[in-house]
Image (tube, rainbow, N blue to C red; front, side):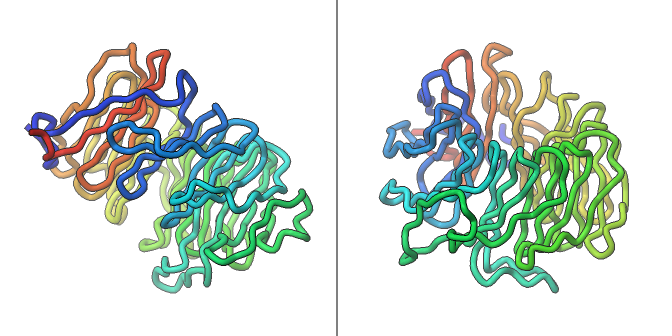
Length: 362
């Protein structure tokens, strides 16, 4: 039986091949489609039954990050460029240059994401983080804007807003809510930014290892950073102070995710911990057999992938349901869900996409 309203016995389960044997680095759900970015340089748009509807080509090296705003897709690549795509047409309208190394992560700051006193930007913004130690802020092009596919010079790019300097090593992760962003770096620090003004609000020091994951919780005016030192640090947005050190993990904290009420963390120690955002106490822990590679959660459930296993944990009861259990021969690299659809990317030499549509089995 299902622990979360998702019952595998009443689901339609489809598996299809994707990107040959290449690594899928990014997974997004768009309308009734699945979007995958790969180190084979392409972005693919699939229907739920595995029909390849569009292949977005143009990057010259692997795609390392995707972000979505309505029908606009932003891709970031090892080729040091950002590309803007219309998912309805499959056309690339803009190419942004300026980073000097791989763009490791990308996010979109929404213009309607005002929380408390943190006024959202007037227009959606793109935030990128790179192995060149910098972040960049760009205005997201909208319908009617002139196309732009120009040279490296920021001065001639009307969409470029800021270069955010300060980190001394690669940017590993970013998180953004409205105008507030946090970046985590291999320099052992995190930084909080106002991306509307380009100002660094706080330099967050205290970790003794590389920062691998970050998350912004505007409602409680705090940010989180997960590190190779095995801890999660909780920082105040008001003054940049460290509010707490969460030390339940035994290896690097590489994955953080948020829901309105909870922080989800995962590590190679095989555990997913669920933390209350107000009390910072662990309310549930879910154990896998192998390193956890991807998580997504909400106030009812957390979905996590590891070697051969996609597991759904009930946040209230602590019960679990296995959606996919294939043994170690099949690595789960990405999971994502929306509504009654759950998707996982798996690899056993070849790359596969597994899709569960709950409540649709005949």
